[in-house]
Image 1 (cartoon, helix red, strand yellow):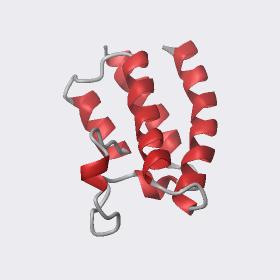
Image 2 (cartoon, one colour):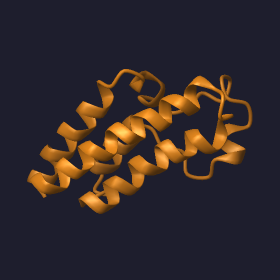
Image 3 (tube, helix red, strand yellow):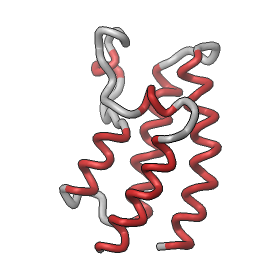
Image 4 (cartoon, helix red, strand yellow):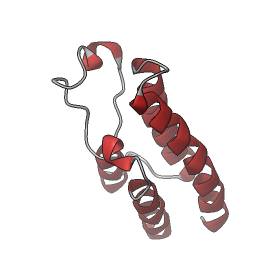
Length: 107
């Protein structure tokens, strides 16, 4: 389990340093996103995902991949397709898919 935590922290650090990551570092502020928590039932951000690993709620690469995908899917679902956040989520998801493939090999 320690190896999973170490490798997953490296993965999340890599995601956190991506060009548009600042949008996904912290939970969404509903003052910035009207009705977000009414529309998104399982909000995710990188801080929450890191905490879920620390708390033992994410224990393997499959669960981690699901949570990361959920974070981007929420952004894509909530935001209009012509918005910056929508485009950032799509781009980061593509980049993250590559990282996750490497992560699974390293695990």
